[in-house]
Amino acid sequence: MRFSVRLYCSVTKRIGELTKQYANLPEKYIERATEQVEWKTPNRINYLPRTVKKQPWQFRFTTNRPWSDEFRRQNEGFVRRPVFVEPIKEWMIYRGDRVEVLVGRDRGKQGIVSQVIQERNWVIVAGLNTHHRRMGARKDYPGMIIKSEAPLLVTTQVALVDPSDNKLTKVEWRYTEDGERVRVSLRTGRIIPVPHAAEETMDYKSRKAYVETDKDTPAAVVEAITYEPKLKTFEMEIMEEMGIKEDRVPKKTYWY
Image (cartoon, rainbow, N blue to C red; front, side):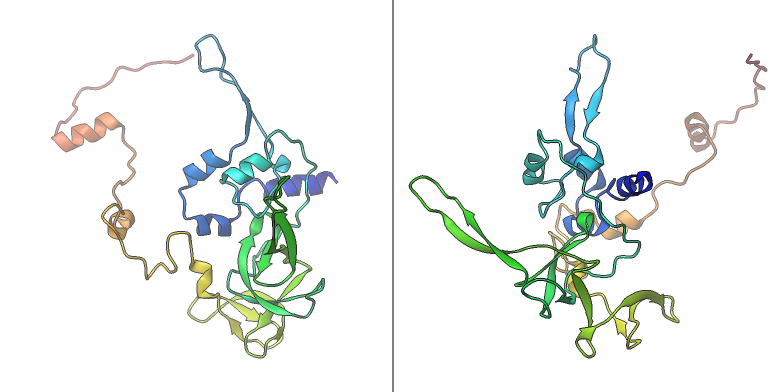
């Protein structure tokens, strides 16, 4: 049990990489927006800086993005039991893949993955595994019923479909002769390419199709190396730039 709890905490300590890629947000903003601060000392000179934060296993990961206000409201003022998530070393299913549902009323049906929630090993298949919810009900208004998709576990509830024959298959990551990392079907041996929808983010459909604007930093500037680390102090670098040579010999000092 101790091993499983420790393994769970190590996996859910950070947000899934696919969620970060879809958000296309800076890492510092995500850390600042997702931290759950329960108590913090006032910013005064007579107080020591102390902050009490929620532990990662206390978060309730849902279909809402971890930096959204809905996620913050769901995790505010409640102490929830930890939900143990099976660690997945290599993620195989991406947004845009065709999968087949293995459980429920839609068992045997195939659909396209529309959303990936890596924190809970969930995927949402468009139009399948749906349920009805009542929204906006009041005393004088019955509300309205909407149809939404429920998440499915990638480990036991869905399976990837081989596009060559539209049948279920297990896949693994391999390398081509050119060194490219690809998914290969274990049943047919064919390559299953990662769909283009996996590159889609909140800002663009594809990286190549994105048009830079005036406020964007050009890619050439971002990729350029602007600083080369040296084994010199700040003063030594200034002296080197100004052509100043130091001929004095420093006096020996001893530390006890």
